[in-house]
Image 1 (cartoon, rainbow, N blue to C red):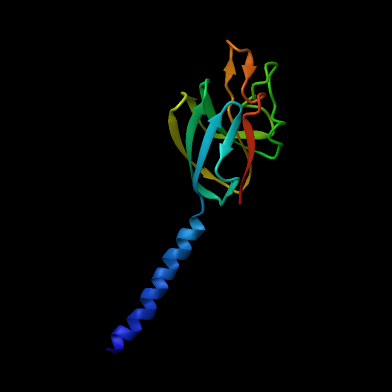
Image 2 (cartoon, helix red, strand yellow):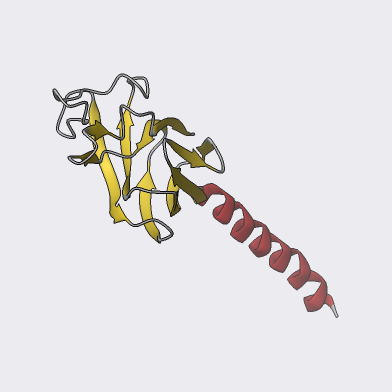
Length: 146
């Protein structure tokens, strides 16, 4: 009987450590809707760690992409070329990951290991037919990792 009494605190301690380790891992899942002309995540911040972005193109018309950029620049102040497309090799920012060419109604997933800091979630498509950069049309939003 004495062994059973000693085992209980040990088991509870192990369960507590597993819980704390799980909480410390951070990250999580962010659902993102791409629309004309916005990027709409279901949350504006997550904790550092492995973050799964589940992205859906809600349309109604255009193919979009989803790009995660680490930067201290404001969402609307990223370096762009003459057409208004973000220069993904530009100063003051680092592209962490992306999902290219998400058709209307389609979805994609990307898992990224994100450190604490400021990010921008954006679509960086240039449309030759419409002569428009989706980023300049407003497809960008600030995102925080704590």
